[in-house]
Length: 353
Image (tube, rainbow, N blue to C red; front, side, top):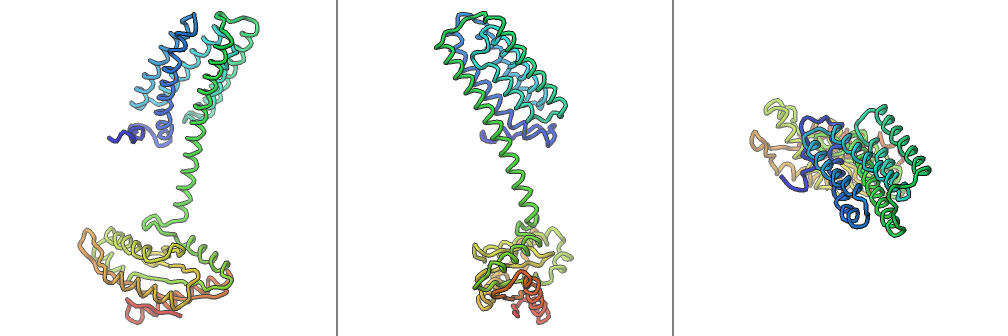
């Protein structure tokens, strides 16, 4: 297994909604372990009382235990154990050293991170209220009770800096990770809404929207539309099956896509029918493009599980200059008429209107 991919080696027992939190916790536990290890030496050398040092060692072992439990799919139990360990460790530290070293920040960080978890809202609110109440209670306690262990100003600066950095990094990582997940999910949903799932090109609604957008922006140039249809595609499906038909569609789509300019757009109009939008392209150039694609497809048999299959396409071309959005339907109608003319005239040819 690739080391870079190990966090995504997710136990099959986990549900889909738990998987992103599982990946998040892999790194969170490593961060917690590293943080406790970094603080270990200063706790031992700078403080006369060893309670914080011993508590930190316990936390290190708990970090390891949480990680092992997580890798075995015990995601909720491992995270609850981590919350309990940090809560006890922080509580003891506040009682012994007071609240002047920003220790309360750990309660706030735990509250935020718990809301990223897959637990129910009621449970999250309960944990949040408990940790908030504990933070308030410990702050009140420290006001009326001096710390058991006094720390110097230099030590106070060190612990303040360390605790603020640790919490900022933990919160920053959590917010970044889950905002990244949200952004990625939104992009994925947008892609699925705009693209044909089989071929990966734009779907019918999106390619029409692209066509209308190009028409509305065509002040002084021509927009051309090429409609193409795979000849006798139903016969391919009936003879070889739909899976082979899908292979033919994907291969043909690849040829169509690679034959267009970067500014052009390709969409699946339905079934075996495609439409290409060519902005700033007059009828003569568009016909040449369609003819070049037709020749390329006819001379490139598709390799499938059933062997090589010869494929041809018919094309209809139409253009519109200085048009309006309202003319988009007319442009599509003319391209469709030209396509049917190509079909009626023997297929594997280009016609234009």
